[in-house]
Length: 165
Image 1 (cartoon, rainbow, N blue to C red):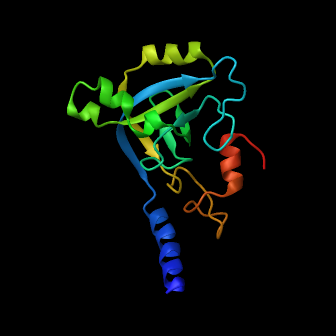
Image 2: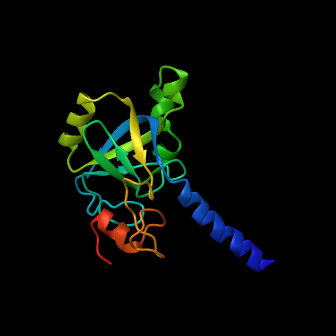
Image 3: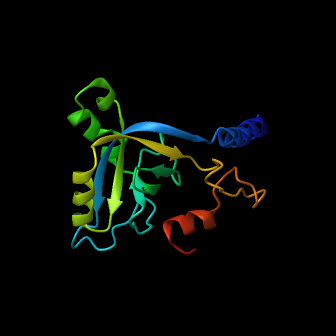
């Protein structure tokens, strides 16, 4: 029985990767930045954040997914309670679509960059999401390093986050 459960779990991991894709999502975009005096501001896994990173609900957008905004693509590497519970969308949405939107928190190195970007762009927008394993992502699997589908290797995550192992 234990072997059957393990086999089913193993199969589910690979079935999920088969359905890795590119899709669009309506989102409430918020911004955040390095706080003065906070020292090493790090993501959920301890990696240092930098421009080109964003916080997402990992149940809706897997970590290491690319989130494509009108002006740039960011990598989903962080999360937080306000992103997961969609506080910004629920509190400022003017209609059902806006109140039900996912929340993506885009990271900037400075407060000035963040506020300038937020002022120049709409609070709500449709973004493209390239999940790990999508053809454009070219993420290798542990079984076949040349494959464009599959799990993300630790080295790949480290290169995305700009850290070393």
